Image (cartoon, helix red, strand yellow):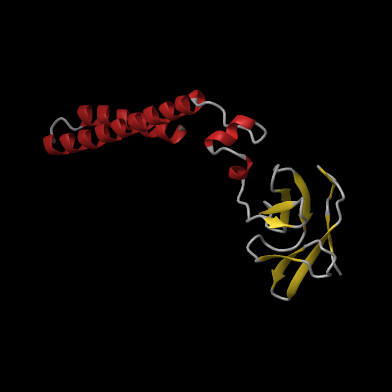
Length: 174
């Protein structure tokens, strides 16, 4: 916005200066006044649009929160807040969905039915193929991240995930 004010001020000064100093050069005076007037009008229009958008954003209702039960009715459920993978059935009672971490180093794991954060997978960039298979035959599926040097597998443990502390219900299978 400060640059717009400077352009506006320079346009007004230029318009006035051309009227005063170019009295004998009619073509130059008209051309200069047209250019300065255009700069003034564009700057004023830009400032007006900026003020309008600031006002419009201030008038907009706050976005629905993921915990608001009414938000699911209009498509604003918790899944719209991040980019999630498909659902993976780990047990009969638990399906999970993953979301790449903001830093691009792993995945956050969420309960697919509630959206509650339940763990973290610390490998991958967020672009890998995710596998969900029972690799040890115990009836509980493990999650795998397909990496260039092999697949990193994570076993479901049921441990709690604590905000800020980490942990969670998946641990790396060595």
